[in-house]
Amino acid sequence: KFIGDAIVGFFGLTEVHEDDAQRAVRAAVELRDAVAELRDELRGTHGIELGVKIGVNSGDVFVGAGSQREMFATGDSVNVAARLEQHASEGEILLGERTFRLVEDLVDSEALEPFAVKGRKALVSAWRLLGLASAEPLSHRHQVPFIGRERQLEELRSALARVHDDRS
Image 1 (cartoon, rainbow, N blue to C red):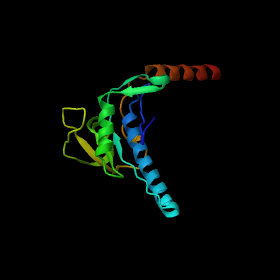
Image 2: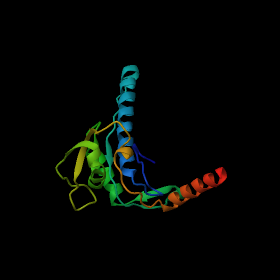
Image 3: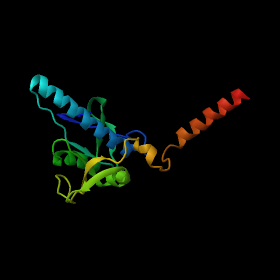
Image 4: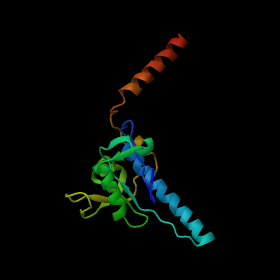
């Protein structure tokens, strides 16, 4: 979703997956790299400067229909992600505490001093993402149990059973 000059992306919005935080971090890295490449091109051809600052945070959100039936999402985790982005320097990706805990063994990072953010009494803990620990997809490096995907697993079991029955 575009909000002013900000772009907001949600992973696991309609259905939770065990690798949502991992996919969000990978998307943040890919976005930062793509913007840097575009910046270099635009600087050379048009003298235009372009930058990006990214905040990634995990947590519960309220999701519903907003004005004109657009998807609307709000909550503390959305607020903290926006404040992380504001606190970041150009080209930086800052991770909120819950995101960091979900991906800490898969990333290189450094802890920042906790800081105050608008709309929250408690200080926010954050980590600066220095890089991914591996180029291979994060979800293949870290085995976590399936959560909230019983329906998908049942559909897969049914499809496999149909294939088996068709071959018999």
